[in-house]
Image (cartoon, rainbow, N blue to C red; front, top):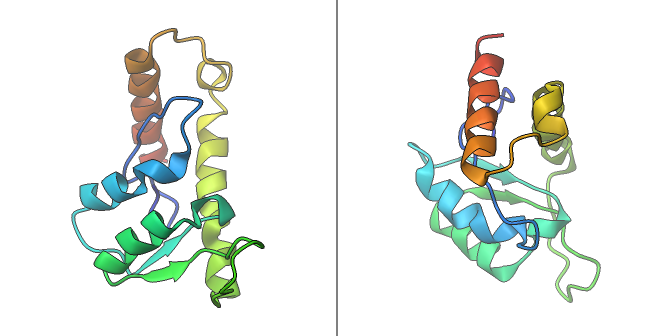
Length: 123
């Protein structure tokens, strides 16, 4: 999770077979203050995610999946800021060890990600 400037706020490591949208409620709980808006891609368009964001009374900026019967509107201009997350991970992947996952254990891989995120804050 990144803030409006693209700085890392929370990092979580999930198993490869688990959907990332399942950890969004935990990520929202880890924040010190309630978010004003939650910007995510279509993979996060689940009822559980929408309910978690509604608890914080934040704006949902997630495009609805094509199969949803109720196509809710979303702010396309605010959705364009989703690239800040992609740019953050792009900066992390500049480190070859993270991009190719040299670390074998999950704890050491997450520690490397935290270290790189801290270095990114200092840029």
